[in-house]
Image (cartoon, rainbow, N blue to C red; front, side):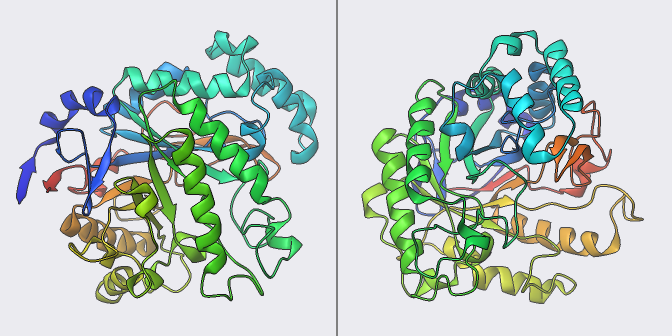
Length: 409
């Protein structure tokens, strides 16, 4: 059945959706009444060295969550590190101080950032990093915004490359330190369990993503994805056993860009029936994709993951494009450069034709620290550098009709 629902009609229902237990039905995510809930999300990073969600040095939590709601998003993919999950009682003040070492940023700079955070958010002066996440989640919930917790990394830092140590489980075959030195499976499982238990306090947390952009390197993943299946099973069990109401978001291999193996060897999800959502990423720079030719690009997306939306197949399930994005300024196409504009218009067309669930990278206008640079500007940010408004005033029109709901069960 196809139906058209305007954004104006969707917004009043957000608060209800944010407090409901969701499940899957064929290729759809639905509520307890079997009505479709389409994920229209923005990524909000919180996985970096200081251990709390970005942007609080510029604005209050409530002002940022109000922006998210007014922009038309109904959910946030909120990223975190296993470092934070396993050290939940670290004071925010101590976390900023401790970040000086790994980032190489002067302690005085980080203390100045912390002072700005507490000036905008006085309650964080005595908060732990985990309670800072709780404050963000509660504020989003008060605006009717769902949250999906995403384990982005083990070691708190920028992601991703093949030498950052966060890419593939250290206990898997073909270990190399470049890609796996921080990704201890036991710590990961403990972190997932801790965050699933934490989620019980917040009814607007509707799902958890097991791991961002799982990526093998060198001699890893040469066993027909047996390690992926093994550890994903353990991760899904950890989340489901701790909090069975949550959706479980599972990304494919090759940095969440490849699910082609599912077509012929579907992963057994019977232990979490009605809870699994497949997770997919694609950018204009994603290796292996020809984004300059729309017909080829759409065919590649269909072969890599889009086919999972085909109904009544052993592999059928919701597919969530949980990361895509583009440079918001500097080009001649409503602010977008030619390469990104070709990619974006083709991708939007594909998302509209499938009425797909999605999450854009990213909300943040800048980072406390990224790759050693304080106040690092995020060119893909939906918000501008001081987190006061849209970076590109044409943002909503660039995304076409993907905010609308046009299909359902």
